[in-house]
Length: 110
Image (tube, rainbow, N blue to C red):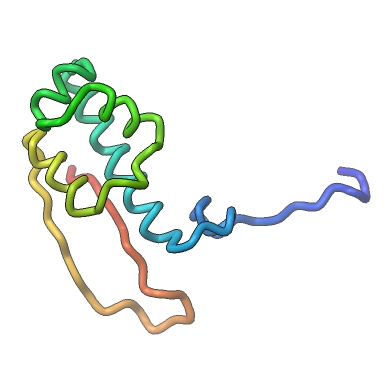
């Protein structure tokens, strides 16, 4: 590395690093869409078939997988996952005593 190269460590949330408002919400939506894409891939669903199952149009599925999900609420994305036969479990707990903010986490069950 030369003297002009500077390394900046990210926060783990690209939306926060880029200065988006409500970065935790953007990251959560991105993770939900990623889960949707994995289900589609695992089940061999085309965008058209997935759209039919989710009750939306194929161009809407295309927009989602291209990261254009700003117009979707978290509730709507959860409903789309349920339409793909995914169980969703929400767990709320106290955060550990630390300086970090409370966070939203999406995990896939084993």
